[in-house]
Structures are given as C-alpha cells and as structure tokens.
Image (cartoon, rainbow, N blue to C red):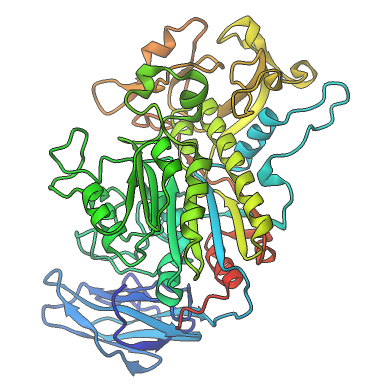
Length: 581
C-alpha cells in the first residue's frame, strides 16, 4: 500500500446508493463509496478510499467529508463525461465509528467500523493451512479412509491429525461482496483482509474503470506484519504459483487471472515474501521459454537470485537448501496429485517432474527458513489440488491430497509443541458439493450399481489393508467409499479410481459440454444427467460451511460459527497486532 496521505477516524456508516437520496427520494446521480457501508476494518489497516458519482452533468462536482470534515488529498478523475471520482490512496483509520458523506452532484453516506488494537496476544508466528475446497465432508471422507472403523465392534480407529489435540474448533461460513457463492480469490482475500471481496478479485474493492490493477486496495495481514514488525512471510502451495489462494496473501487485482502481474507483485509488492514454493513456473519465466504464459522477457528465476533468493526446482535441491530466502518451482503448472506422484507413478503423467517434494517437505523447509527471522512470521500453506480434482469430480485424487495435508499438519503440530509462540490453523477457503453416500465393492468391477452398498450392507472399508511408503492407504482397496457431488454437468460414472486422470466432459463444438466419451466407453460406465447449466464443464463450489481447527496461543478466538472475515480479526488478536504502528 502507498504511504497514507491522511489519518481518518472511521467508525460506522450508512450508505444511500443507486439514485436514492438520504430521504429516499429519487436523485439524478448515484453514489458509490468504498470501503462499502458496514465494512469492518482494523484501526491502522491501510486502504484506498474511493467515491464514485455517476449520472451527473458534465462539470458537476461533489464534496466528500469524513465525520463532517473535508477529506484532504483526494484525487479527482472523470472516467466518463457523466461521472466524477475521488480517490485517496493508502489512508488508515483510528478506532471507532465514522461516517463518509457525499454531497453536491450526488448524495450518499457510508458507515464503517475500525477495531482498536487488542494487546496481549502471544502468538509470534502463524502457520495457516488452507485445504482448497476442503469442506467438512472432505475431512470426513479423509478420516474414513485414513482411520476407518474396527470391524469387530464398529468403534473408530481414531481421528485425523487436524482433528486431534485441538485447542479450539469452529465452523466457517462465507460469502462474496456480490454473491452468496464464492471463489478461491475472494474467500482467501476475506481471510487475508477481513473484507467482503468481489468474486475473482484479490484484496480490492470495486471501481468503475476497466483497468484491473487500479482498483482501491486494502491491506492484508501479511503486509501489516511486514510493515509493523518486519515479520517474515511465506507462501507454499501445490497449485501453480500465481493461483488465487497464494496470491491473496501478497497481491492486489480485480482479476485473479492477472497472472504475470501477480508474479511481479510477489517480488515488487509490499508483502515481499521470503519463501515462495509452488507448482507452476509458467508465470515466472520469459515468453521465449516453452510453456510460459508471460508476454514479456521477465525471468523471475534469474531475477529472484539477484534479490538474494536461493532457487530450487526438485525435492533433492529443496532438502539441501539452507538460506534466508527460498524460491521453489517444481512443475510447469500445478503439482501432480499425491496419487500420481506416489501410488500410480506413471512416467508419462509425471513427465520431466519426477522429483516433486511432498507438501510436508515444503512446509518443513519454509519453517526452517522463516525461523531465522527474530520478528516472527506468517506462513500460508495450501493443499491446492483438493479443489483442482473436486472440480472434475475426481474425488479420489482430491481426498488423497487432503491426506497429504493431514500428514503435513502433523509436522506443524510437532513443531508447535516445542515452540509455544506458534499458532497453527487448519481451514478451507470454500467447499464443494461432495458427499460420501455408500460403500462400493470393487470386486464387482466399475460402474455396477448393485455394487453400491448402503446401510448395513456397506460394512467397513478395507483401505487399511495396504499402505503406501508414507503410511497412507492405497487407493485401490477391495471395499471403498462411494462418493458423489450434488452439482454436476452431464457425465459418466464408474465409482472407481482411474490411474490416468480424465476430464469428465468435452466440448460439443459449441458453447455446451458433453460427457467425455473416453470415460463413457470404459467398462461399466453409465450416463448421469447433470443439473448445472449446459455450459458447465465441471463441478462447482458450494455454499457449505468449512472446518477450522486451531492449535496454540490465541486458539480460543476461533470458536463456534464464524464468518470467514472473522478469521482475520481473530488472527490479529492472537498476535496482538497493532496496525497503527
């Protein structure tokens, strides 16, 4: 964020928009004020104030006041002949309730609250795990696979690492600024800033321009920690490097698809992460390199090393690294799934990336690197491929990536046990419409509806009969789960895992999608009518709640049913963070 030009008392405001004057009578002009009415901010948290008045006569102007006093430093623009805008970049607020008022060419008011700093938080370091798309039902499926039940008495064999030794637990609901449904960009942004954000946007409010990089910004927790404490910042994900979740902790844009700009902000923005480890390299390499998505000659692999980063591209290189700044890219795009890397190991699938690290390897090295900063750190670790495989209805690959995450949580818990100033959180950004509804008898082959076992016929799964090299169950058990999704396109079902991933649909040559004939031609596959629009090629996010598991100091701030924006304020409280410094 830019250096603030003014300090403002920002309390609680009300907003009259869409051509309604304060008294409810029709007005010729409409007024938009950002931050939006009802916004909840942290005192000292920097943001861009934006006022837009449209439907005016050319030359008309408006007056903007805060608590009845003119706002100094506003920059006036006219994006159209009938529009005037006023912007103040990088301002911040004192604690309390304040009113932004607009008069003249248009009338409107907005109310916002700013929380005072809460001293006493003892967490110096935060490790935030985000299972992308990991709703409660994903956790439950993972538990059924990894632990299961004793067939002698029906008693559980245990819980996942993320479910045991808890200090606190919460259920998280979420929504967007513009919808009750969500995507990964605005949900991760809500965690990072405490704000409701537009779908597909990262840490910005709306504006009326086409430029996706000029929207009014709001400061993230990583930027606050960097600014006020000089704390370290780490971002780790099994998704491609500029994907929405990691980007939400270091970038600002209206369009999550601004991949090159996001990569640039990692190194030239405010958060300036010390640790960056991802799957995809295609936004960090010059346009002349095979697979690059950039439109310029920027080479962040080379430039990062000039900035003091150690660059690694294989697990072997990663485990040997000993540095203060670490940059790792381990695939051209997303990581291969855990199943592909460990259990299937098809060389044609893995290609040139046969030495990808585990999520726990990256987390361990991130902790080792960030621990060298005496001012603490914020580390975000994403199991990004849970979501990437839930979308195409490949639940096995998605849930096994959740099992990889759970093993990574075990590492963090062991670390926290000897470092009492560490808060460990495990949550999700959003859910998918996944549900375990039965068991399946694999001995009867794929696609046999009579092999779907319900109630007492389901008995117990046999996943624990055979484990892989990491102690995680093999996917091809004789008795497995039957799992489905509520929101689907037309597709063909087989109930069984496949060793090579296949998309559930293909384009019909127009704007619609049809079931993938390669799947439909598999033995036992049968057609299932979807319920999503014809232009949907995969499953979608759901409005279902997500879990939050908390370990360590400040965990008591995470309890009950919470809105996702509250995670930000609970982390701030746990750390005793004062953004006014």
